[in-house]
Every structure is written in C-alpha cells, then in structure tokens.
Amino acid sequence: MKKSRFTDSQIVAVLKEVELGAKVGETCRKHGISEPTYYKWKSQFAGMNVSSLAQLRELQEENARLKRMYAELALMHTALKDVVERKL
Image (cartoon, rainbow, N blue to C red; front, side, top):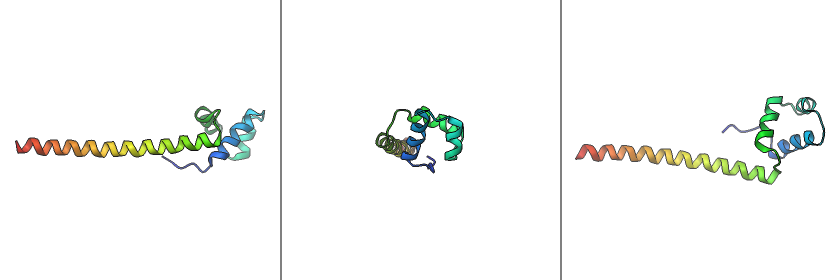
C-alpha cells in the first residue's frame, strides 16, 4: 500500500475544515491536494477521528500481511501436493 504524505491528523483536519463550511476547491488548494483526493478521503474516512483512522490503517496493514502469508502457504501447499502425487 502506498504511503500517504499526509498524516492521519492532517487528513481529518482537511475533512473537518470543509465540514465547518469552507469551500472544497479553496481547501484543496490551501493544503495542496486535488479535489478527487479530497472526495476519496471523504468517502473512506468521513466521520472518523484521528484514533479510529490510525486503527483502521493498522488493521489494513495487518490484513495485507495476512493475505500475503495465506498466498505463500497456499503456494507451498500446492507444491507439496504435486510432489506427493508424483511419488505415488
């Protein structure tokens, strides 16, 4: 997963700024992000605070790690099954 150049607190601050009445275009220019990035953040992180956003990121990293582990084990399992079948 690509590392964001914005911290969790910065993302939450940008979203809250627009919630409080700032215009999306002006806020995006001010913080150096594109409007599609803002709307992507809004769809993913709307209503979250910094701690829940950090917890979400940790869970996403753990999920990616577990998926890699599963893929490696599945590959090893398939290879071992092929070896056992050849011996019979």
